[in-house]
Amino acid sequence: MIDTYCGLCCEGCAFQNEPYHCGGCIKTQGNPFHGACPVAACCREKGCVHCGECADFPCPLLHDYSYDAQHGDDGARIKQCAAWAGSREKSRYPQIYAYLMSKPVTAWDFKVEWQWQRFHVDGKHFA
Image 1: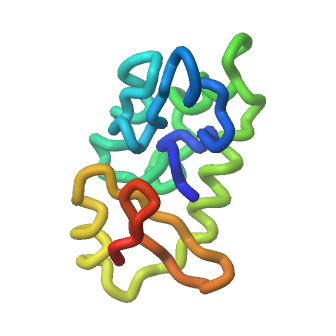
Image 2 (image 1 turned 45 degrees about the vertical axis):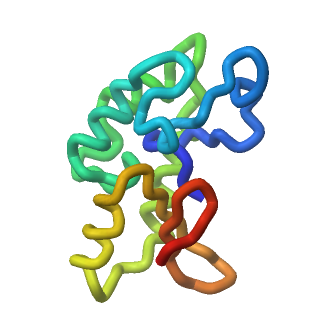
C-alpha cells in the first residue's frame, strides 16, 4: 500500500506510537510528526501520488533523503517508488484517476491478487 510520497514504509513504524503519534505521510498530507516534509511538498505540488510518478525521478532531493548518513536507507525508498511505479497499471480512464486522486487524503494502491487499482481513505475503499 502506498502510504508515503517518498517510498519509506510507515507500516510498523515506532513513531506511530507514544510519544509521537505520527499519522503518517499521506494521511497528514506531508506533515508527519517531524513537521513539513520537503519531499512530500514537492510531490504534492507536482500532483503525483508518490515520487516514482515524477518525471524527475529520482530527483536530487529524494536521493539526498534516501542516502542521508543519519536517517537514510541506502536507496530503499527509491527502489520502493520504482516498484510502485512499475506495478501501476495504465488506466484506461485517466480523467477518473485524476479526479479520484484530487480528493483530500486519498491513497492509491495496486492489489496484486485482484490485478487492479484501489482508491481509499483511512483504509476504506471508495473506488
